[in-house]
Image 1: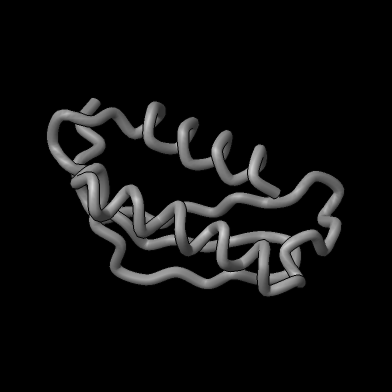
Image 2: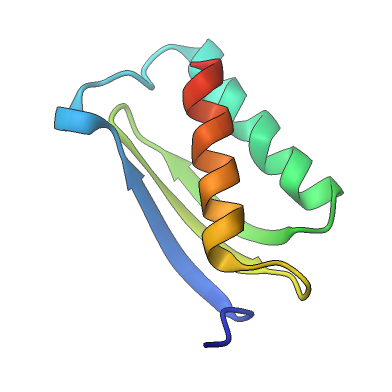
Length: 81
């Protein structure tokens, strides 16, 4: 299946806990997205960080798989938080 098109992605915090309320955690998400963009893995069209979830509008670039990018993004941000 081809995942190289603009798509909407949502990630939620377990039990909807407001872990993303502090600015330092929001910055981790922003830095992680910046890394993905700078390394040509994704193009980010927009995002919203809520206290207990995030929304992204992004496109996975050629040569990368959606599942791998999502896994790496979620794993890295979770470990940093």
